[in-house]
Length: 113
Length: 108
Image 1: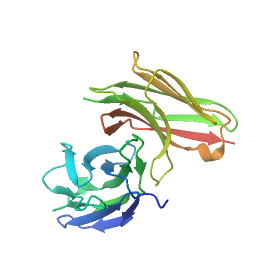
Image 2: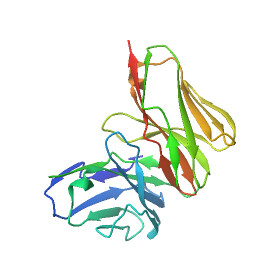
Image 3: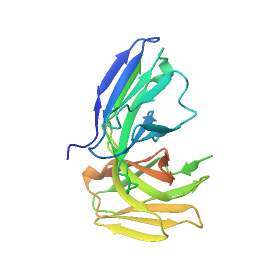
Image 4: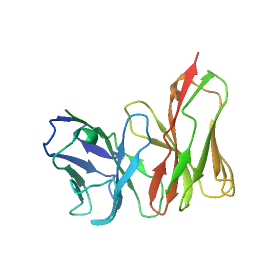
């Protein structure tokens, strides 16, 4: 059992640049979630996929953010024209269809300078 | 909206017991999770309550009262490795809404 993996683990970018993160869920987990966590806060829900379908997007996810899960396996989260307020830890989680427990990946820490 | 409150910090001595309270007011409720998160790491699952009462899992126990919008996590026989942030999260259908977390510091 390899767990949820995320790549890269750290990303430093200049304001205005685009960044893309990848999440590989646990094999056969058909639910995938993206969360954002800032220092001293709990994770905040961003979006949710069941297989390849994106079923919900949070109001937090502005039009600069887009997420995909093209084949129902790995997922990508892209942020266009990054802003300093985007600096955070981006967490991915997955769960199987008949369980509510979400398994989190190690996260991608984004720093926008 | 979602309102989930838990204390910011707690300190306890190795071998002691600590109780972390969580109160919630949410638009939906399908269960309550507790996660542990060490600094710089991903949250890891500790417990899940969907019905009222106490769930015990080794040194960790979690309690839920749905009518009061209240839960607690009980950590017994504290060890230094238990120093971490503990996150209360309410499940609404498929997504989780988290509290800000309680940082527990265990002293020798």
